[in-house]
Image 1 (cartoon, rainbow, N blue to C red):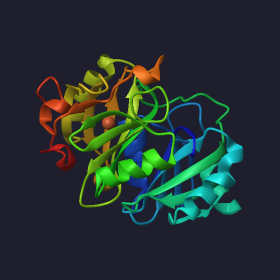
Image 2: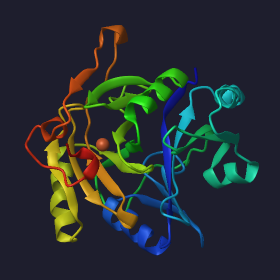
Image 3: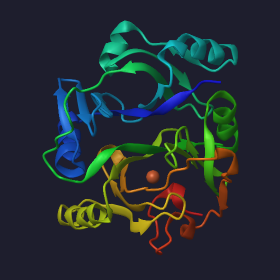
Image 4: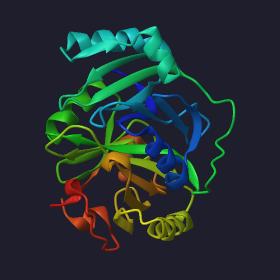
Length: 286
Ligand SMILES: [Fe+2]
């Protein structure tokens, strides 16, 4: 069993780093920490970065989890290799590019590239953005799955992943006390379905709603409230069609974990929003 601590970063290819930088800093409210001709690193908390853009194909999208114990990296690689999962160790140069001491990569059954990182770098400085969006940090991703039942089995059998709730066949998965760090949504493609940043309170969600409307950013869902995590939310469209989300998902699952029962919600708009907002997001529709 591979034990991971939390989701750590997302890496996205883009053909236009300048546009990605403007959007990530001026609109989302992330802090630029490093920029070169082909790289852009953005932070949202005390870590070196939680989102990176590289010059390349926007279809190339990666998420990373931090291992609970850095010394298990080799064993994780061995376990996945023995299970015939496409995987490999990252080189020193690739680790330096990710600001981690070491990492490995693998492909989930849908073909999503996932990285497992050991000893990722801290920033040494707190997050200090130019726009006060109320961001507390990188929260979770929605990941596209061509077969959520198969991919759920892959995560449950290989990792310390637990199901917090289902919406239809799609599991909301956690590796720690927070309600979810990854949700697998049925899609015909691979890739990241949305990237979530946690914000402090509902005022941040509503302030963002006015701000994004003023900036003519396309809102694709919300403002609303998820019945699963309990978070208030707002989804909006970013560079290369990527969907970003703010939410204040306050629900944690702690204490007697054996007493927690994942709840089954039907694949219906009310399972995504208890206020009645309708998603303009393909994977959230019936
Ligand atoms: Fe979300």
